[in-house]
Image (cartoon, rainbow, N blue to C red; front, side, top):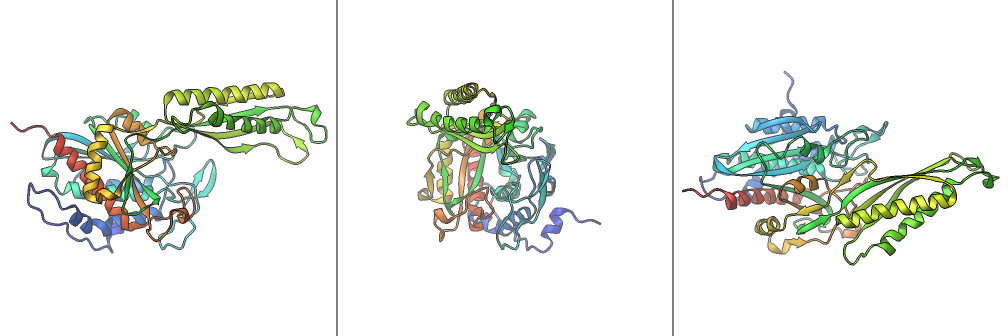
Length: 440
């Protein structure tokens, strides 16, 4: 008989028993972490070695679903394409807590000598590409699998319900597809039963292991991608006066866009980013092409700021194009948009107390605004949410020497994973305890 993914992976792994507990006693999170650490690391390495791109996380979803089912957790698969949702009902009534982990990897080649280095190949935009967990989503999945195991072992003592959300496509679905937290929300992942609070973490490769960072209110930026198409008139490179040069026009647009942040926005209020990441046009040296395509990203922290940036991009691009005799089309957003990642202030106040208990108050650090983006923001738009970063940088490496996310040299110190486990456990148990109905 064919062994399941989970059984095959664990056949050589010693499974230490979780600590015995007295019913009604607060769990010893350190002991639980010690009992699960080997499995969490083994899961992480297996997932790391077999990364999958957005909306294609078939193997990862199967591994997660088998694990949750083995714990007696009710499982729904195929949510937002490949998502897995587990529902654990406690022994008494109480709030519904959602815990989320994202599952997808990135089209990035892995460059290291780890024994579990990825050699996976996937398809991205019609081309075969190397695939790597270059943002640490493998650690998020493994940590939440450990949390599910620990909480399932104390289900009779839980005052409420835990919804485990294993989400695909956080990095954005393939072109022409929906996906991620936005699609999960549309499909009702926060309902039946209705979620009262949602928690998530993200590993941080340039943050010291053993620390967590947070911010109340806006924490990460909203993001929209945009496309600018400049159409000119093709001509011989030796006779530029015979055409309309879209390369020169597009270059002037790039320069003009730099004035949005520097001259239009009040950056003492909120930071903002307007970036061009792709500039493509032409086929050879002596042909002025017909068109140039530019792709970019926008990062803002307030709706009125977003509206202003969008308006100025359109005005600058179309007016420069008109002056040059070119036709300019601006699409905002082009393929994706995420709202601001917002931590509910009340929930943040109680959450940092929980994190301080497991990490030590000196290791719970307030973060500045972050111009990265996260689609957990869709969940936090619907219910109170709290999102934090978990340190993954070895202490003997300087921050400036640690490889950043989305790069081939991305690296995580696994010794910090169980702080993430303890953090999610404390957040869940403390929230349930604080919001359980009064017993008459």
